[in-house]
Image (cartoon, rainbow, N blue to C red; front, top):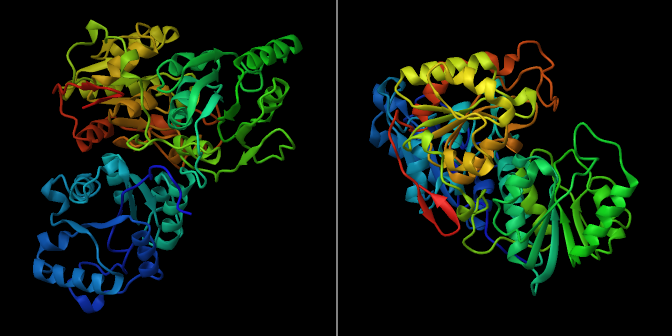
Length: 542
């Protein structure tokens, strides 16, 4: 039975040399075309799944005169003879010195291919063998999967959002991720009241949004259990009818003592919801079983959650997810396992309720500025103060208006950073007002923290100063144009450290501010050029 519900992708874009065929430098000879092992079978699986295929390839040999356009077309005809037809060929004929917008790592080829295939970059996945391929995918808002070869540098592997051993392995992952977010057995009727839970910070609640929308599409009513840190984000999510704010001691850090009386009160509160079932969303390092036990005590008859640990009778649907899956897709896959799918026309990306966004503070000025959010509730994910100051100085000198944002406890930080040439809004915006400020920005410069997910929900490009303490492919900005900066192979990689284990925060402090300026240009964000947003029912779009 074919899974129901919208698919993640419409198209797969493929690099040519080193991904589909052996990399013969500047090849203009069809006789030298050698497909990589398993390529034909892998491509046929994508075609059979209904995905359209395009090739996106840099061919600077044209600019250098090593072969003619006729030679190149002969090579492409031979590739199609051996590997089957492609729906589009997107070729950059320029050299690095030409400064074009199509040569990878620029995203131009991805945009061209998506247009030709009648879709958008966010609904494409790009498979390639070097960092330029992954950078082009991210800058366009597409998914990237790296298939390393002997010429792929270790740092490119470390930076990649996802890595597969070869092209057949990449196809396995594409098809697996697509199947995972669609119920195998769809529901025959609507559920009644469904309790969903995500008791974390604002960013965690935001990335759970697609999963919650899927549940809401198949339920009469949705109640969301969240903690105090996630309340403001919960109020911005579509599909939520009731919010239950309650701190869970096994989730919060530092963890407070478990109060038996408080747990009895929570059981009573959960029982009052009279939920027909519950879907418990968690991060990959958390257990849903403590809350599942309380829900059983509250009389909830059906509970679904992700659990690697044996749940006994606590779960009716025990779901498992591979490590590294993007958090929004992780949530969607749990919803799908419980029988819920996004409705037709609802993209699997992040969304906010446009009617809940307040006006942006007048002090922010006209749209088109760049927002810099240097702080974070987790020390390791914050932009170092000196770097933030230098970024403001460099961007201001290049003609960008920079708005510096932060929470009430970051006023001193934002004042000092903004003094380098930005506008200080530190402590003057709640989460809703911050979303309104970000919505009018040309781009957001930020670490791995909640505002990055706000930008993703608003379609605003992100320059991601990403400390590698958690996987970028799992926690990076989702389906929005992004440039990742920072040392992806630093000693703190995958430690989940909240305090920097290496003196000086080298994974981010070594970033040169000029790289941020380059990133904005790669994303196509001009200096001081307003681009107003248009509000439409159910979302905000450019």
